[in-house]
Image (cartoon, rainbow, N blue to C red):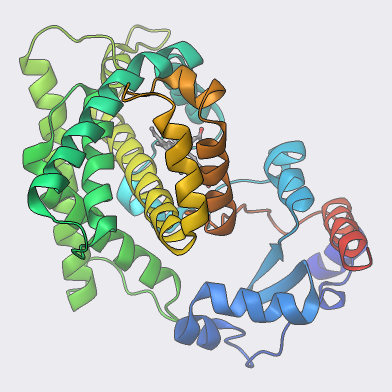
Length: 363
Ligand code: HEM
C-alpha cells in the first residue's frame, strides 16, 4: 500500500541506474572490500553523474555533478536532513553544529557566526602566521634540506595548535599529539563502522570498539579540560569558546555543558584534519610541479620578507591562492557528504537531479 503510494509520487526506483549488486546485501560487500571511493568511481564511469547504491535495505543516491550538489545542499536543502548519514560522526561530536538540525543548529550557528565574519578572521591572521613561523623554525632545527619526514602529521599538529589558539585562546602544544592520535583513531574506527556489513553496538568489547571507546574517552578528557581551564581562569574572554560559555537562551539558561563539549569537539574535528589534508596535498603537488613552485616563491618573495596578512591573501598572493584552490579542487579533503531524504527523495528532486546529470553526460 505504502509502496504503491510512493510509486505514484516518485519515479520507480529501479529506473535509476544501479551497478550490479548482491542479493540482500546489495553493494555492502563491495563497499566493505574496496571502500566508498573506488565503488563510486567505477559506477561513475559506467552510469555517469547520478546512480544508486544499495546498502542492505537502504538506497544511497549518488549525485556527482556540482549543480546537483548545489541543489541538494542549498536550493532544496529544507527537503533533506542529517539523520542516518551523520549518525557515525555524531559518536565523536554529539550534537555540535556539524551534526545538529533545525532550531538547535540555528541557535549554535547564531552563537558561532560572529567569530567567523571577515573582520574576526582577519584579526586572527597574526596568531596563525606566528604559529606557522614557529613550526617552520622548528622544521629548520630538526631537518636538513633533502631529509624526508611525514609532512601530514606535522601539519596536523600545526592546524590543531592554530584551532586551539584562535578559537579557544589555549596553548595546546602539550596535548597535540595525544588529541591528534585520538581523533585519527576515532575517525578510522567510525568510518570503518560505516563500511561494515554488521555494526556491533559500541558496548561490545571488540578490538575496534575498545580502541574507539578509548579515543572517545581521551577526546572527552581534552575537551572538558579546555572548558575547566577557561572557567578556572575567571574572565571568559571574547573567543568562540567564550561565545558558547556566555550564551543564554530566552529563559537565561546557559548551554548544556555536554553541548559546549560537542561544539569544541566539532571545531577541532572540522578545523584541523581538513586543513592538514589540504596543505599536505598542496605540498605534494608543489613537489611534483617545480615550475608552479618557482612561480609561487616568486610571488611570496615580493613581500620582501614581510609576514603575509589576511589582506595579502586577497590582493597580493593571487597565484598562491589559486594554487591552494586548485589543490582543493583536485584533492578535496571532504570529498563526499550525505543528506537524508525520508521516506525517499521526492519525484521532483529525482527528476531535477537526473536532468542535471543527463545534461552533462550529453554535453
Ligand atoms: C580546507 C579546509 C576545510 C574544508 C575542505 C572544509 C570542508 C567542509 C565541508 C565540506 C563542510 C560541510 C559538511 C557537511 O555539511 O556535511 C564543512 C562544514 C563545517 N566546517 Fe569546514 N572545512 C575546512 C576547514 C574548516 C575550518 C578551519 C573550520 C573551523 C575553524 C571548519 C569548521 C566547519 C564547521 C563548524 C562546519 C559545520 C558548519 C555548519 O553546519 O553550520 N572547517 N566544512
